[in-house]
Amino acid sequence: MFSESKEKPIYKKIAIDIANRIIQGDFAIGERLYGRSVLSSHYNVSPETIRKAIILLNEMDVVEVTKGSGIVVKSVDNCLKFVDKFKDMESISSLKKSILNLMDEREEIEKKLDIQINDLMDYTSRFGKSNPFRPFEFEIEAGCIVLGKTIAETNFWQKTKATIIGIRRDGKLSLSPGPYAVFQSGDVFVAIGDEDSYYKIKEFLYKK
Image (cartoon, rainbow, N blue to C red):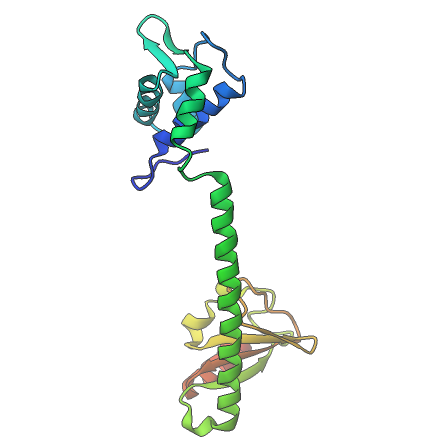
């Protein structure tokens, strides 16, 4: 499905898709295309966007628009020329490549974040008195209010003004857990905050 955007020429993408469908044999020469309302529903765009796409195809002699016959397929050869003309447009392969690049960047950022968190914990353990933000460790016990909930569901930061930077589970420390990490019984989480945060966390977790 296509979505309309002011930043991207969606009508051109739709025109290219229609041209490709003609090349693949979905529509034959002389065959009438669907009406604008059907096309707008198919591509999930406005009739005006479809109108622009059809105008573009008409200008390239891919289709012919007449009052009596509607939108009729005119030429496969012109379809090939049309697709070739706009081949520099964003394609699925380029989108996949962009996504992969972003995933690589995210992985690199997460690595750097883990290094920074480790450095912070090391610095705090060595020079705790000079650091206004100290790490605190709390164990999730059977009666904890957060048991079975995600970090986001508990509104942890809003309640305590502390940030969770790691969760130790089964002897393994997982750094920078996301908002959907679930608190489990026996977990020991590491949070950073000021001195007041310690008491806020304690009261929040173990209040009856």
